[in-house]
Image 1 (tube, helix red, strand yellow):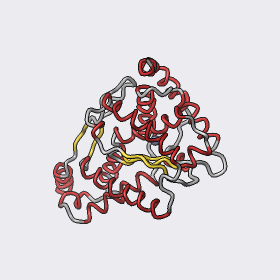
Image 2 (cartoon, helix red, strand yellow):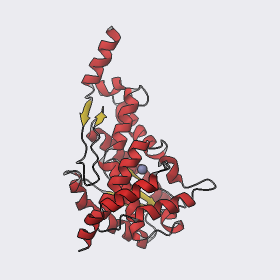
Image 3 (cartoon, helix red, strand yellow):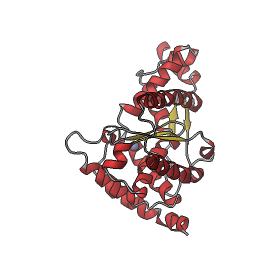
Image 4 (spheres, protein in one colour):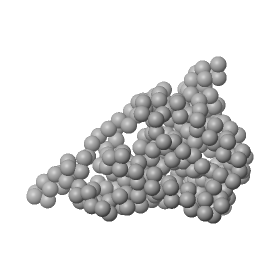
Length: 266
Ligand SMILES: [Zn+2]
């Protein structure tokens, strides 16, 4: 009994809150999320981890080596940033950042706060069109907007895995380091949950459409990804597991956001 009381107290003091990170958008995502760590702490941890990855790539000489790739991802990001306002008002002001790392990985990811990396292998091997590149970036941006990493770290805190609540509660110096490790783990190692993937897919097509990219390119993107998945498979699929019905769901939601696309093209 006493233990339960303390557990409840710790949860309350640790700032456990239920939030709506985004507006429902045209695709209609309304799921509320339970957070046990502040967005500010997570974003700080993410920025720190992101800088590590970028610095390491710089030292290896693999950062932004192909000017054309860099130009393409920046153009897409710059077109999408203003459109994020439809899903959350604060997002256009985030310190968004994208880099291309010259590596033969079929991978891309976004950290909290809009810090993204696209690997050259993905663009080159899958011969992505701009619409397909926008589909993958829209999906990653959606993970950031929905704060899926913060939610995942919170879930791990609640179940006693990962960052300790006591640490968060007492603000020990180690917490920043622990959080940074947790953000990296969520980004690079842990598979996204099915619920997170569905949300990122749906918001992804909406963002692409709003930015004037054909939302149906998400379908061809995932077809390419899946056919590259044999024999070891793209790294992307290990953190972005693909439910059987992904292609069907993407098509339904791409159809739904077509008016946004047509409007953007006008
Ligand atoms: Zn994903």
